[in-house]
Length: 337
Image 1 (cartoon, one colour):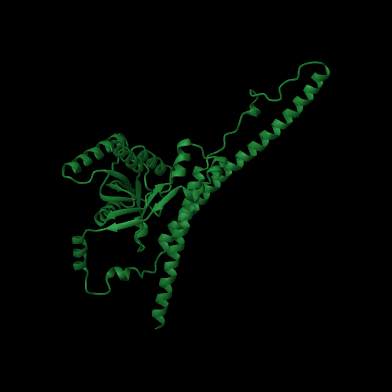
Image 2: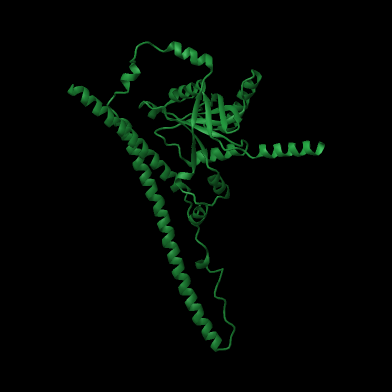
C-alpha cells in the first residue's frame, strides 16, 4: 500500500513538472482600464508596469497591475525600480491582493516594440518566472477605433538559440527558425465578475447611437498613415544596412577563400620541389597565417527583428486603408441618397 501511494505521488509530481502550454491570457477588465489609463496619461512617452496574477494550467490569469514610476534622471534607476517593485508587492501582500508576478506591460508607438531590449527583458524575467507575458498597448492605434492590446511571449526555439547566442544562417536553418517565429501572440480573454457585468448593463444608455459611434466615421487618417509610412521607410533603411553587412561578409569570405586557394597552390608547388630535392614536405595548413583565421558571421537577429517590424507596419497600413475605404464608400452612399 505504501509503495503504491509513493508511486502515485511520484507520478503526480512528474505530471506537474511537465508544464502545459500557455493557451489564454485572462485579464480582468479593471486591469485593462488601469493599463489604458496609465499609457494614455503619459503618451507619447513610453511607460511600463508590473502584471500580477496566477498561473493556472494553460491559463495565465492577470488580476492586478501597478505602474512603474517615470523618472527624468537616469542614474540609479535600476536599483530604485527594484526597490519600488518589492515595496509595492509587500504592500499588496499585506492587504491580501495577488502579488505573484506574471509579466509586465508597456506602451508603444505605432507598434514599434520588436526590439532587442524587449527580448532581453523577456530573458531576465524567464530566469525567475517559468511563464511570463508582456502586454503591449498602443494608444496611437487605439485612437483609430481599435483596442490595440496584445499579449506576447518568446517562442521556446528562439529562447534556446538566444541562450546559445548563435544566430548564424546554418543554426537558423538547423532549427527551422524564421523571423515570424520570434514572438508568439497569446489570445486575450477579458474577465469580469458578475457584479461588474450587472453594473455595466445598468450603465448602458437607451440611445442606440453615441458620440463614440460618430467618431468611428471620421475620414481623416492622414497623420496615422503618414507616421506609419515614415517608420516603414526607416525600417527599410535599417534593413538595407543589415543587408550591406551580409554582402560585405560574403565578399570578405570569397576573398579569403581565393587567398587560401592561391596560398595552397603555392605551398603544393613548393612541396613538389622539396620532394624532388628529397626534403620533408611542409604542412598544407598554417593556423598562424591570417588568411586561415575564420571570419565571424554577423548575427541575423537584428535583421529578423527589423523584418518582423516591417511586416507589422504593413499590416497596420493595410488595416487602416481598408477601414478608410469602407468609410468612404459608406459616406458616398449616404451622399448619393
